[in-house]
Length: 231
Image (tube, rainbow, N blue to C red; front, side, top):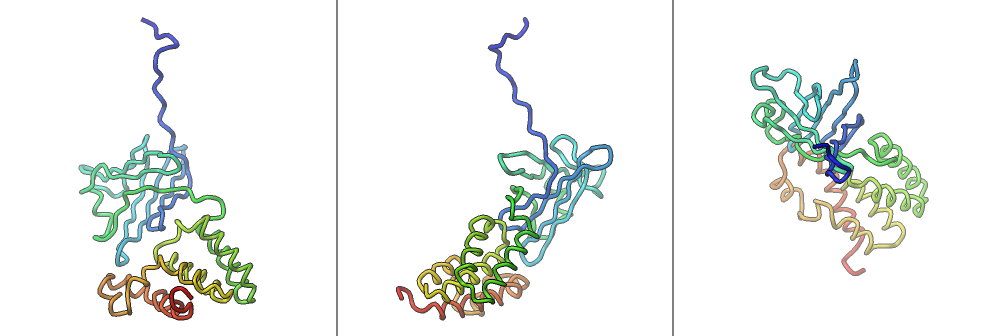
């Protein structure tokens, strides 16, 4: 019997869009691009704990990618599902895909197209603008620049860079005489959870500790500059 207009319609799946995607906190990046003949290819790069990585790429058919250099008998299959403003990336064959990742790294998660002004190189340029303003002691302008950068792009900075940004934000507030706001800007940083480098070393893997230590020292220094709570 022919279907009438009242028959339910099945929604067509959303097509994957080529582009450069990032996870929140920038631990992973996904590039989807058109190859020769119009076929899609993916490339995933991940930096996990203690500098462990994932690196894999390959063709996509429909919503399933197959990693190059996989075992033909048991390939690494990666799923790509459009989900709002993100692409949800998963592994259909977790064991086969582990060979592409270090022990402390995984690629599964949501990858987003950064908004305008928040792509990696755009963030660098905006941070350089802040630095010029700060060094020229144009503190109100520097504050506006870094607050806007944090509001628009903060979720795309990695865990170390976001704390570095919070320190720049805090020291600018300090120069404007806003001690309480300075401390508030530093409150979310990881370093505020630890009294000193020895305590921090016990918590972080060795490479992460070395990469973060300079930011932690800046945080502890800036907390002293900002003065006691309630000032």
